[in-house]
Length: 332
Ligand code: SF4
Image (tube, rainbow, N blue to C red; front, side):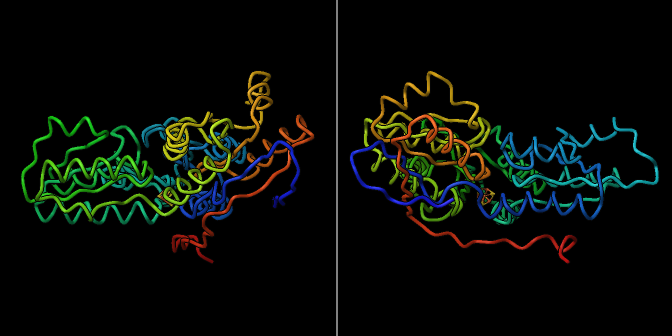
């Protein structure tokens, strides 16, 4: 959907660009769709393929079964002559999970984002080279769990830093390297790294920032969006509550002083939100990297229906053209 600038004294609806699907999410969703065609259902996906409730719901309707752990596949009493297919999510898995899948004789299709794989490669090398490793990220996030698994499999020593307060009691010996989750806040991470290098001058502050292009671009776009919307406006961030990069967009926008609200989809627009939007001069909309564009379009449509005086304009900060190749097993 394209939105054109219309002038006049009216309520403005600004849309951040880039927003929504990144190359890693696009690839992961395509992998599941192609696997359905190639191997037929049931297709099992370990964890959510990407952190978006709508994507998971739509794929479930097409016969995909989401399981929390590989063991859950055993409950499905499949014919002995069927080799079940399991897809690993875009967030990546630890080598242990691969081993279990091989032991269970599952057909493995790996949808790990290549940018997460890149972190895994570095993590493995640092562990094998005997470095103490610091991993900046959210301990419970699947990506961090996968990276920790890679380090543990290589017998590495690792500590996770979630927030700047964790540095106070941190003890660290040289040699040390650091890594980060791909979907965390760019500005918070820079603050953490600055504090780390103050406390541990032997740490190289310039190496280890693994926040991906899509997270960075969406955070920059949200920054511009907030500036445009202004402090009396409202910024709606579309995305699921377990989507790390969506939550960071909400936090970043709120930090900049705007009323920032996360929205799952158009159904979340209730009378309370309508009142909030009615009171705002400007409305901004952005979405996390796992959000299908149709969810944004449906929200925009609902707002336009409620406020006929709304005019929309896209605020573009970067044009993205990143694409990742599909796994060989699914290429034509
Ligand atoms: S947010 Fe970044 S790391 Fe995550 S899937 Fe998208 S491109 Fe890959």
